[in-house]
Image (tube, rainbow, N blue to C red; front, side, top):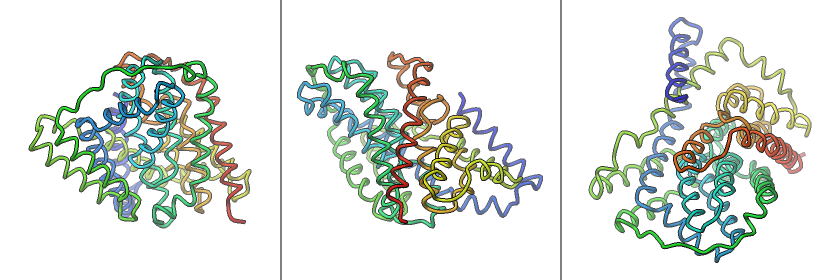
Length: 386
């Protein structure tokens, strides 16, 4: 409901600002040139992930993962963490939070284990694991453009060390919090067969081909759109009923578009002077910490995407942009609205009768978010060129 209401309202406010002249039409045109590839990528990758899930690809991987755990919960948890990390890095945080969550819950129940540590691992890594590549997070795609559109490998060279730290810190916290559950043993249940082997094979091939193309340097919307069209064509032949309007993430696209236009209007009215004063300047360790923590606070206050857009003008260099990404990617673990992926994750848990109270989530996030942001930013400062 929040997405359905907030997106159109922000879009209407931004359009009104453009209509009355507060936001120049030339700025709107520049904004459109910047964001349409991002929005098209989000649409295409969502369709790919939904259709691959419908084909049973993620469930099959989860069941195989349960066998690889060999009855040891700690091994299964590490495999889930690895899968969540790879899914986030290559297919984006929303894919991990929305589609992997039910798979992980089914996996834990399949093994007779408490699903909570596995579900919490999924949502934390969906956020903190989204630093490495441009495709991992919408904010990264925006930062890539602000950096002058470096290749995915060049982008990863800047983010690799803090990305590793941002993944390891939440895992360490979960290991401490749920050490008894993670130390348990388990036995696997019966394996669910694939309904349509043809759809399954097509999905596996398409996703397997898509992953390296997303890091090849080709604009990411091109392979994502091609993959979406291929899978759509296959499903049109094999299982037409899956192709429904709900596959398209219209609410997310409207929300993102509204945020883009609204923040652009605020910038036109001088918004940039306020976050610039708060976040400071320079590339010293303290300056980078100031920027990343400001990003973390902004993300938990108003959501990570508008927080990034508001602070981007104050992050003038690639190093400061990475510090900002640490704050808005690894930091939104405290409030439910800090990340859209978190809200969608909780919705999936509720539908599967897995209970975690928001009060507990906030308390845990208030510990792990600052710890992750501070350590990842310090790691960035340590490896930064002199």
